[in-house]
Structure formats: structure tokens, C-alpha cells
Length: 228
Image 1 (tube, helix red, strand yellow):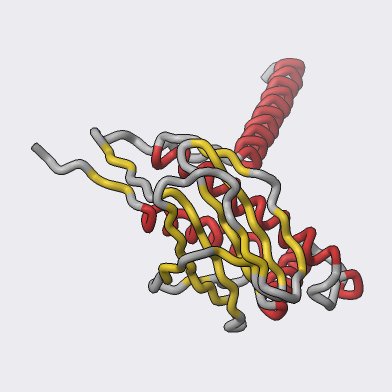
Image 2 (cartoon, helix red, strand yellow):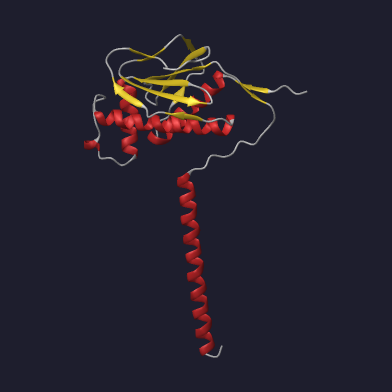
């Protein structure tokens, strides 16, 4: 009998880290990487200069905290705004700006959304999330999950931006294992933007084909009138 594959907390953390790098790198054009070494920690905290937390529940319960230094947050924020075509004079220059917190909160929302999608596809379970709370802080704030967790585990991962600025991700969740009883195909994620673009291309190709057919019919009629 073949041994069943077991998915652990570290595997789930790795999936979350991939979501962080994929979303932030795609949104900002900034090359984001994370350390291969993971820290075991006893508690999660929001730390200066910009912190964010997201609760999730469902197949398993947990908390995600991200802690950005002012330099890391501003680098990602400004790269993202430039990639969106925002004029330089309209881009905030301080990490205390509400616009920075709002944009970083939206990016965090995209990260956790991508993560929940991956969990659904890869683990065949579902988790839900609350709206990320991103804020500039000057003191350390301890965050705990207001629910019962079975043998909670906490991990911290270090991320590095293209300009070597640092930020951290902390994950607290149930000590859990997912055991694969049999092989299954992982469904490919559906990108709404890709679907819309493909449909638009099909409609455009169909219109071109129809126009070409009309032109051919007109040429045939003209040739017939000439007796050719």
C-alpha cells in the first residue's frame, strides 16, 4: 500500500508565501523574494511601521499578520502606483498617508484572496477571510485569534524587496495535517480578466470573418455582372 501524502502547516505557509510574492511582484513589478528559513514564534504581533492583520476561518482557523518597514511599504506602494500610470506628483511620499494604507490593504486583500483560492484548489477545503486591517503604528501590538484553536502554531517569514528592504509575514493557525487519500487533479484557477479577453477576441475574430465573407460575396457578384 502506498503511503498517503501529508500536507502540514509548513506546506500551507509555503502556499501563502507564494501568494505574497506572486501578487506583490505582479502588481508592482518589484521582484519580491522570501527566506527559505522559517522562524517558529510563540505569538503574533503587529510591529512598526505599517502592520496588517487578516483572520480566516472554515476548513482551518488562523491569523495572518504582515509587518512592513516604512521603506518596504513605500517601495512597493510607489512601484504599484507607477505601474498603474499615476503621475509622480500624485504619489504619496510618506508611509503615514492614508493612501499608502489603503493601497497596501487592497494588495493584502488580493494576497489572501489568492491564498484562499489556492487552498480550495489544492486542499479541497474552503476558508473565508475578513477585510484586511492595514494601519500605520508606532508601537508593537499583540494580536490573538478570538476563537479556540487546537494546539496553535505560529511562524514568521522574512521577505525582501528588489531594493533589499525587509518586511515580515506571520501566520498563526491550528496544528493540522491534510492527508491525501487518493490522487486527484488540481483544477486550474479561473481568471475573470482572461475569460473576458478571450471572449472579446473571439467576437472580434468572428466579426472579421463575417466582414471578409461579405467582401467575398460582393466580389463574386461584381465578377458575375461582368460575365466572368
